[in-house]
Length: 281
Ligand SMILES: Nc1ncnc2c1ncn2[C@@H]1O[C@H](COP(=O)(O)OP(=O)(O)OP(=O)(O)O)[C@@H](O)[C@H]1O
Ligand SMILES: [Mg+2]
Image (cartoon, rainbow, N blue to C red; front, top):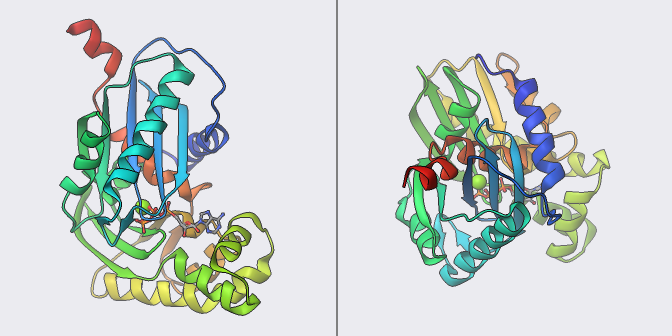
């Protein structure tokens, strides 16, 4: 791996600091844009030509379920607004964006949303491949634990050779917390995302163990030297320790802000540099 995790963590930290910050910071130069349409949230990230984050917008959303856009209009409205805010912040015109899809789903689900938002699709890539490219992985597994599912993609010689996805994600952690405390789902979700109390992780341990079981099933019979985690659910304080204990013989790597890794990777993947296009055209 030639790009160090420290370098990616620096980009993730920068992204985290920019999220939903509308402060004007006019930008001149080449840039690229990625949009991640997830089941739990939608994110738009703008990078400069060297891959440094310039702007990032995120909204919690309930517009995609099981890879299907259940609220097509809602999703495209969110994308349109995020792109509008990014354009206003940077003083640029964004006409094209890259997007992604979970492996095994139809990429048109995402591209239709992008087009309905009045944007052109600059590129489309499956999510684990984008992460594998950003991290320059050669032989490893990318495990994405998002809102609804745990997905594993096996990378060999830099390519996804197999990928699987099963229900159990952050939603199930929230349900366990809501049940334990006898509080509404939304309240448990907010507590989970904002608390640093390791007691929450102890309560979530059976769900995390289930996620690890799913991943064991996904990688069964294959040699996997390392697991790279992505997806917001891995951000739960204590998550890494519980999850990694289930894989004593595998290096388990957690990025500093796993919620932003996939969107950052999607934006980095885009090789369309928009300012250059304008000059060339
Ligand atoms: N700090 C945090 N601690 C624990 N969980 C978190 C934290 N931040 C976000 N999450 C959880 O991460 C999940 C969203 O992650 P992510 O954005 O990777 O999912 P997604 O891409 O929208 O979903 P999917 O990959 O299933 O389509 C939600 O369940 C959310 O509760
Ligand atoms: Mg996702």
